[in-house]
Image (cartoon, rainbow, N blue to C red):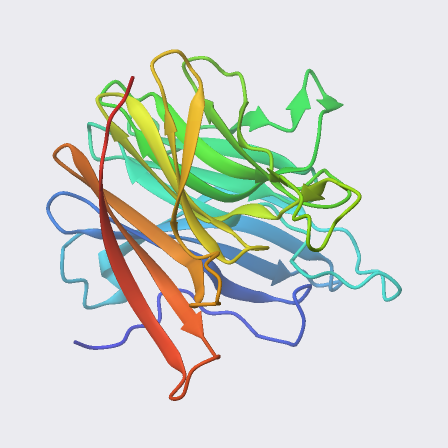
Amino acid sequence: GDRQVRDAGIEDEGPQSPGVGRFAALSLAPDGRPGVAYLAVTAGGTGALTGALRFAEASRPDPRAPADWTFYTVDEAAMPAADPHAPQDLPAAVGLMPAVARDADDHAVIAYHDRPAGNLKLARFDAAAGLFAAPVILDGETAGADTGNVGQYPALALEADGTAHVAYVDMGREYGHRLLYVSTRSGTPEVVDDGYRSPDPATAPAGAPVFHFVGDSSALVLTGGAPHIAYQDATAFELRLAHRQADGAWTREVIAGGAQPFAGAFGFYARMIPDGGAVVLSSYVIDQHVDPLRYCVEIWTRSLTIE
């Protein structure tokens, strides 16, 4: 149908500029009502910027007018002044890269990245109060002490009792990223993939360690309470799948990519849904080594075995 403006802002160039709608994440209630989490950067009278995570929820499955939407501010904070000598690749704001899920009462739960603090946060809608409760820090800070730069590209899944499971990226290493996982049941972050790869003797004869950038574009599903995470190894252009075993250990497999000769770059915008005793995965694929060039979405099915 029709295209509607739900929130309006003034767009400028660069990430540190006023504007709304970046990192939008859509969630549908069981009755089809849409909800959208997104970043809003606004400028005050002095030009100072404020970054906010907002959630817009429709009152009907087919919203047709502004009155059909209710807007909530989930989290917000003043943004530091831009440093012209240190350009930003992302806005220095709370509310980046939100992932949205619905609890058993159909209320929104949002995991997101607080960029200035380098934290992973989680916020839940409080129906009794009619607003989002104060967000909690899942990783990146303990008792006010900084413990790392984490939380980009979160993926979120909920159990029926509300337990949240989140996969996310640890950017704190000098080179290479790690894929981490945490649940609100244990509260202890776990390393799913540290990015370490055995060196290729053809390119690293001295046996130098190789660390890849892993964890971007992740997706997380639960089967029987066990998490499964699809994600990209951006260094090898692989789509990978990780499973948490009953003893807490993680196993990993390559779904596509990394082949020689080169057969395409996989893992972009990974998505996954459970399907009985299996998962169905999709990934955007790029192959510029063929003619005609290949840009497509591929789909795979993998059976699950948890030991």
